[in-house]
Length: 251
Image (cartoon, rainbow, N blue to C red):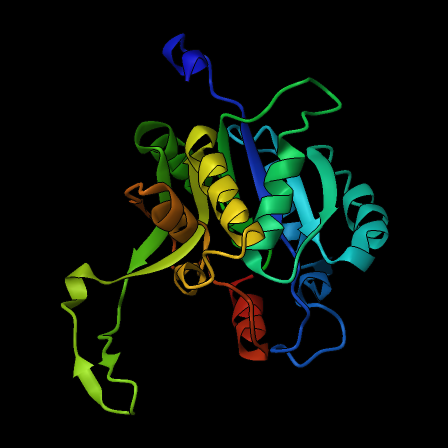
């Protein structure tokens, strides 16, 4: 983080994950391409990244067969100049993030640079804001790894696995995790490399049960504590048809 010490903003790349299939939405078209308010869902986070003060560029991760469509009908049609690359994702989230990280390491057409800060955001969370990006960026610079999250409004319970309640954690300690999740690259990249190496060697499958998002990769494979950053209750993830109706109402 030498640039940070000199007062220069660390270079920040956002990996935007847009690999949904639309199965849970019950539509033929993947949810990230559904039009809401005359714009595809993916347009909304891209529009925030395009004018962001902290995000320098973006790696867009989409299904293998959708690269040309996304480039022509979303990126070029929307004049999103900060999209550095569009790459094909994998079967699992961690595979898609790993592909995005590898693309980010190759540098940019505009300048030969690897990011110092990497943020990862779900393309199905359309209500990304510049304020949330800035909060996550600053906390990642300070603490190394963080995630947007909001305190749970509901009481949650832990099941015993057989349909009965086992315990109820104190609600003041329960947070609902969101994205962006932001990291110093010197922390994020080694964790993903370690995970990829273990999987190539046939090890680490048991640990994958604990990998549900990007902070869990860093926690499991990097041993790093994760800072919670105040998120936004509007920052919903559009997964079902009901979520789509909520989004329309918020718009």
